[in-house]
Image (cartoon, rainbow over all chains, first blue to last red; front, side, top):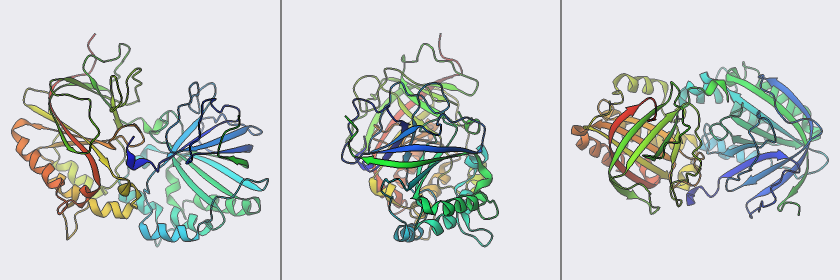
Length: 228
Length: 228
């Protein structure tokens, strides 16, 4: 592995109980447990295998993990959603520094900690756009606030993380796993934020979204080592 | 698989003779044969397993291929270099349209067709940069011609293709497989181009390159179906 990529974060969402017996979490890895409360289809036809009432586990790891026997979401059998944190694709340095100043840290697990996993797929048209064409759709302009501008207004109370799945899990019907956490009291604000992100007048980027689900969960606990 | 990503091109470079018996090339796939002539280390210490005199095969495919028993470059045993064509990360629409107008098509296989595969790895510092910081290093500015500007001057005679390996092959010591083809008479121009790309006064992006090899080959033949 390239030494320079040691800070990469791989993520896996797997059914609770499917933790591989030989999984060793290094100091940079972590494991969170969730209870799925609701699965809402927003756009797209491909079914998700995650059901409400199920237990789900997120593993973040500095190196990729192979789950033998796990299939991609959308296939038969057990599943593992997998993705990776990548470099910044649209945020500029000053935007990013400003965002980091105001953004809330990831909340601790608790009965009041809501987590929403949002698998998002974009159309072939999106991926044919050049960098400047995609960039302008993300940015604030005189015509629209854009994805970055909308997300920023909620960043002090809605924890946001983006994992990339495109080319990492080619069989998956999504390109990204957007992930959010917040105190359940802020759920109305989360709903407001996603409705603004889905309004093409404020965020024209959403014209190119052709797959989207919301998986509402409680973040029950966080472990640095898996259960024995 | 997302229907929207059907135009994706996956690439594999494998030893000649290692074509999987069950490989079926669809209409969108192709297979090229090469003879390796020289392997030149430019930067970085990780060894490459490719040796001069060896036969090499490139497979381009619309969907990913699993090569069972093949290890990543840098591991023991047989190898497969794997990567994928991604969307445009730095080129703007007008730059891209201008480039397409002047760029030569991929040359046909022949005894005079030179191909150079250039695995390139970038440092952790590169991947921590924001989009605007990386963009400025690629572009032509008052201070430098930049990667895009230099490549453009040679595009009418040097065929250029970029495959992305970062996060696709996490164990590989490179992030990209840059690929070039030209008539052997244009080899001096190719050498001139890469020397300009490696001059940080004309292309400061190269400050962030920490791994680079040149694999010089002849493109011997192109097949749309593998040998029986």
